Image (cartoon, rainbow, N blue to C red):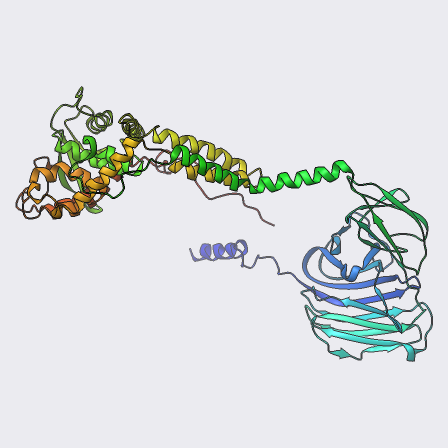
Length: 624
């Protein structure tokens, strides 16, 4: 048994990452970084870099980055082996960006040292000053995470010079370091610079100065135009450059007589003949005139763009004026005065919809209490025990038939029908994930009812839905048309919420309803003699709509001491108190009814109708 266990451990040590079979870690550094720089009389320099890499592990490529700092440009880039043979094109990849040239060499080497030679010509590396010319060159740049054991840079001048007239400096260190070293030797034509143990992210920079007239100033052709960003053509050939441009003579453009032209869409074309000479600067200015169609078309375009991006202001103003004309309610009577009964015998749900212009679950809950008061329902409060503890549930008992009852409103019959169906009793928790299917129809019926009562000019649900649909279309269009239509859509949706308009009758009914709320909230100050148990039950559902049922019950604490016949609590008559009864309706009944009647089934889990691959997570996997 022990032998098998030992064998298993040995096998796993090779299979599990981190075990004996794990691949060797990779590391590398430079043994040498040697550079030769030939300064040419035309102010270009030819650079040859011999880079010796030390590899531990498997490697397949190297990258050499040539930065375009201070406008330096590169040409004739190639990579050679130490025997002088050039690498084939399939092994060398050269990519140029706006800030650098990246040279990538592909190979397959392991645990070895290897030297490659990078060759290139650089233009713009020489600085020209009043008394001397200068080569300021980063032999080794800081953008490197490995050390260099040894580096040597040799600069060859185009002719012999008295060493006393040559100036040189070396900087080794971080980019902001000004510390100099004296590791150099100067001959009459050859100058050598040395550095050892160059740490990661450190520079090796040389500065070499010599007398004037050893190197010819290259000369630049500067081209500008009004307007800017015109295309440049030389002898009919398009350049990649656009104005303003500073073209280096001998690199960007050859010497000789040239026909220089600039062109820009919608403008006249201008050209000039110019004789370009090495070592001399030339400056050309062009003034292009916009063609009439372009001039006025551009103004029209910008004007339309201004209107387009300013359009949300106009859309908002239009919607405001439309609301003011078609959505703003007529003026009411003014100061609210206490009223002692609902307006026009309005039902609780109708009054709730009138107040906030929305048919919601709170209105339906109040309707159930009102239907119980009218004798259609008896509510039994129960305690449901489960593995998760105790919770409150309710059973609804049907007390009388409601089919064909013309005293009921359509939405009331729909509520009763969907509560009971053909049953005599129904448990509220049994309606979960079932009743929600009819909620939309019940609410729509309630909206139609308040409109038929003459409280609104048009069905509030229809009005809001129309604005919502249009708004959503514009919001979706905003993803394509630069966001602006999305702002229109949001404004349309917002104004759509307040666009349903009450009639004069509806405004008066709301004013009356606000007065009725005032009475329910502060009943002890009005008609105290009429506060009877029947009054409490009759208006309890209205108090629930206004969310003042606790205050309404407080007025009856001394005159109402037995539960209504339509509500059977858990504590019986002895434990009944009107204030706690109202509090229970406000908190427990409201929340339990709302959660059960509105709940809908969630999507199936992996245990109930799932399938392989149907869950979240997962995704692809890969290994190098």
